[in-house]
Length: 494
Image 1 (tube, rainbow, N blue to C red):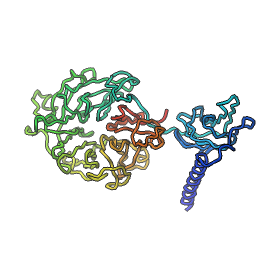
Image 2: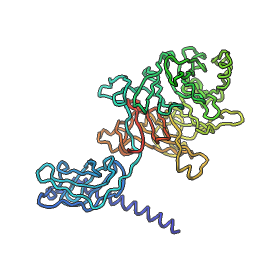
Image 3: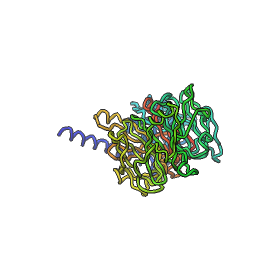
Image 4: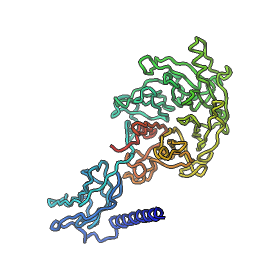
């Protein structure tokens, strides 16, 4: 009973604080106050008596209370932890600002009179408790006003490109290497070296007959790269998945040995089972999902035999179709291998397929989020949620789930392409928006898309993100922000 009462009291306290802040912000933002009575008086001291809230992170709305602030924002400067805050408005005895990034030491200082020779400063008696948080940043890339920056490999600071829809995957043997495979703009495959901080194109489109590249994965031992290609120029003998052998020095280049692993038509993606190693790939034709036993391939080639990749050769089989013809989708297998999610890109929903240990294959899927042909942006449960072109996704371990000893401890984060944001799907079937669509942008353009870094929801914006990968060691997301022409990050503020 006491616990419930404390919970109720805590909620009331939070709401009371929020209401108090809202009232002060309203007063500081009001345009109906006679400003003439609140002008800065150099003959009177400037004081800082309080501020609310007492704690928060970058871009937190903050009201500072005191006296003799004046009413001219150009004449007032606010710093928090030595970092200059964005000042929104000032009205005599209060001001409204946004907490700057990296305000670690927390001193709240108001300086008034900078436009004159009579500047005064006052410091709050207590410090703002600055809390580090996950924020959006930019790793590499730029888009100029004409969008003609082109493609240029090199250091992160100067590299440009990142201009096609694509997918991201870490090298399983060299975790500092992040690969980008592009579907559009015919650019092949790039490697981002996170230690050297440079971008390099390692495999050209000609390596794959200059066709669309739809996904990238690796064999169970990490020695082979698997690339899916989307084409139908050879009908049912069109290469669907290529296998590329790693060079002796651990790299992949245009000189790497490669061959066609599977051929059908119109493949949108391929994924390797993380436990048993078999390959799953699809076809846009009728929404088919196929299974290929990788052991058969390795036994054949290592024994000196010839591998036959065509459908009629019988080296892979159809498991099921997901719903109808012309369904564009990608397969993402859970780290335990117990199930996979199927993101249906052009029909705006997500399916789940459970793994059958007896047959070592996935079963026909069922809907877990969204609704076929109904796009939108709605956080919610199951078919009540709405997405718009869900593209690549990745599984991320949730520490809270681990502490609660849950059976499934992973959330599924994905790029919601046409909603210009990053969202996640919980094991319980709940869709939530994680980052993007910031409403506090200083651009003031009213768009849901943009290029701003910062607070996950208040400030940050993306522009048609497609690829996403997660590094558990550094707790960092990497995102291909396609129309922003950048590689973005989500990481703990440094």
